[in-house]
Image (cartoon, rainbow, N blue to C red; front, side, top):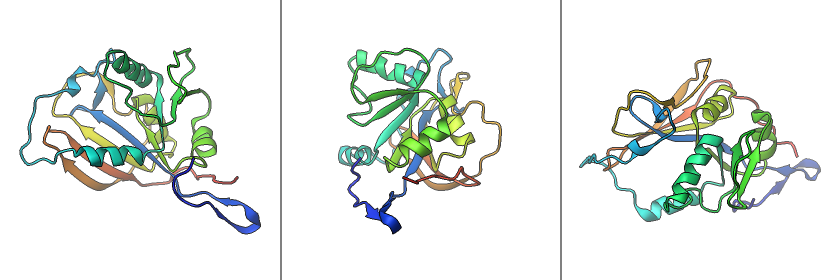
Length: 211
């Protein structure tokens, strides 16, 4: 994929792949749930207002979304996106390549969607990193938990909605170890949403860029 950078040739004519970044981004309730137990996210639309918050300028949002090269998600997140589309709310991921991690047979409504099953580390390091600079994991908790557990993530963006829902699907599932993070940015918006941006610290899995 053309990211706007020229591909430089290293010794022996091998390609020098631009540095890629894997970002985990999900919205969650204050108590850490990304969806209700049945998968519903109706609570994301809240009536809160924070006078001192920033507004989401449409031009900035468009430019920000343009900077994302591909999306990765689990089957439940994909089914939620299909539900939004069927309800007339549009497809959330534009024309960007969207990789759905699943072993189930799911409907494929557009050419940009590709299904994948198998080793996640091999898929990210061997398939995605050489081809895309900005790789976004958009959910759900099991997929993103595995991404973080395996040391594949470079950044975590956590958008906190101004609501507590008591129970549901956690932001990260089955995370069996501590993962140190470094806070890079905190931003509050007029709708009461707060976004936390962290760099992942620790010992990530080596990124193999060999061609």
